[in-house]
Length: 113
Length: 111
Image (cartoon, rainbow over all chains, first blue to last red; front, side, top):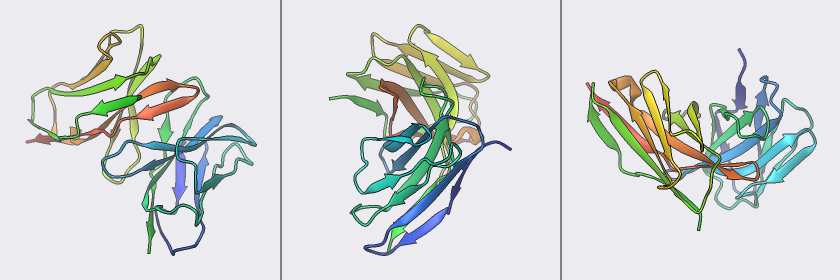
């Protein structure tokens, strides 16, 4: 089935540690996104990518990094510079930048211990 | 400042009634607006998209209206069922390849 696969579903990070969340899509979509969701708040855009080898900062990019070496993959690294990383992270994709439907993965829960 | 607002209070309704959720926005001029459903611990799922030149859109028991003068969208679920219980997110085109999401409204449908 076509879709977006995020892994792991649950991840624990120690203080000062970098962690990477995986996101793979087989929808042949050009655009990919990372959102962060906190309780009672809307989804906030961390990074987005329109094509391979190109990505742009969203509204809350500080403390995060991404790469887009393949069309199918858009991993997110939560660095130690992100002071409040505990949240629900959602990877998404869309056909292109024209505002079509956004398809989401099942999300990854990151907790700092 | 730019804002997109949905009622933060949960909406409780009886099965069979119509649920109406509201999305208001300020300082945006979106070309389209979307509604998504999100179940606990899951990613949002697309439901409907309505463009600025459309007043109303329907899909099965769902209906969305879009009033660009009032800067408001209404999302209706008719003949609601307990399975419709979820959080519903409004999202709009913020320009420059960005989609902005509201915080969502939690809907509970009682049998």
